[in-house]
Image (cartoon, rainbow, N blue to C red; front, side):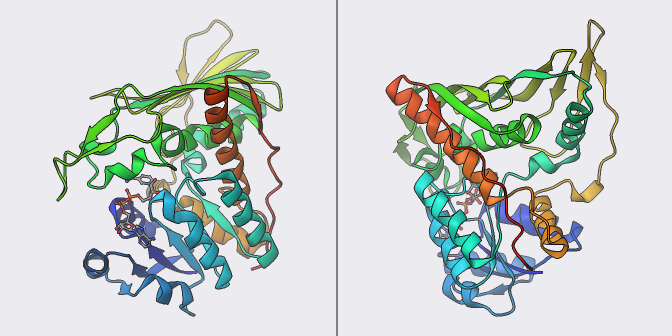
Length: 352
Ligand SMILES: NC(=O)c1ccc[n+]([C@@H]2O[C@H](COP(=O)([O-])OP(=O)(O)OC[C@H]3O[C@@H](n4cnc5c(N)ncnc54)[C@H](O)[C@@H]3O)[C@@H](O)[C@H]2O)c1
């Protein structure tokens, strides 16, 4: 399929560079509100540059890859579907649950696909763990502990302020890595609760043309959540932009007969360790798919699924379930209650 990407920023370079590994799609065009940086990006990667409206209307494109900041996601996904194209968007699917639901309904009505990051759970490390759990290697899953603590992106990202607005914060920005992974491993989430704090209310951009610019945070920057899965497992997740100078990220899954230790869910590979009964941890050997262990794997799987007439895995429905869970955690933190999460909808297999 031919892909046009919108949002020629930091992550766009990674997608375009990684796309060479995938035989299923070619990135051929790009657009950005900032025409100057969009043109430079097009030149660097030998792509056709156009306006966003031209790109969405282009007849030679099958998929629009949405790499804009979260606040712009819903409008672009909707316009993409309206123009008869599949959409693959960076996370989160949308800022609000209502907007996310509207998009999933729109795609179903149009017979088109929405794919949504993260796709790291499709990487070989997490796939190995999923198969191990399905095989019964840890017995019946009883719970998990997930954590991703960083200092926040203002130290390395030139537009980091969007990570501190609605649609951002550690919960909506990095929460999707572990929530998506845990749903893939343990099934849908039934209810959630959480606490959220904002220890640092002002941040300063450290890099890029706006370096030195200070901005206020509009969303909590440290969140601890508890999750109850429909299958009975219980999990905790901590996500934070308050761990300055550190990067702590990993997942433990516990079962009645053993535990699995999984690497950073913001990656595709890494050591998977299994500990059964009272034995020591040992590495689970698995094969890497080489260059395909990179961002774009979810889009590759989407294209393969369209061709095969089956649902794809990094789906709009899954992303909506994760979005609903994140909002349930936030509501719980605000109200001091436990909040039920709408059941995960079965992904549809829209025709090619
Ligand atoms: N930076 C990362 O490491 C990273 C990793 C994973 C996912 N993401 C996700 O990718 C998305 C983009 O992040 P980024 O870091 O590349 O941001 P960025 O600020 O580097 O790039 C975003 C680009 O989108 C453009 N843009 C903004 N609004 C637009 C609109 N309405 N139409 C067209 N273009 C528009 C901006 O001009 C900018 O060039 C976000 O959803 C983010 O959560 C980023």
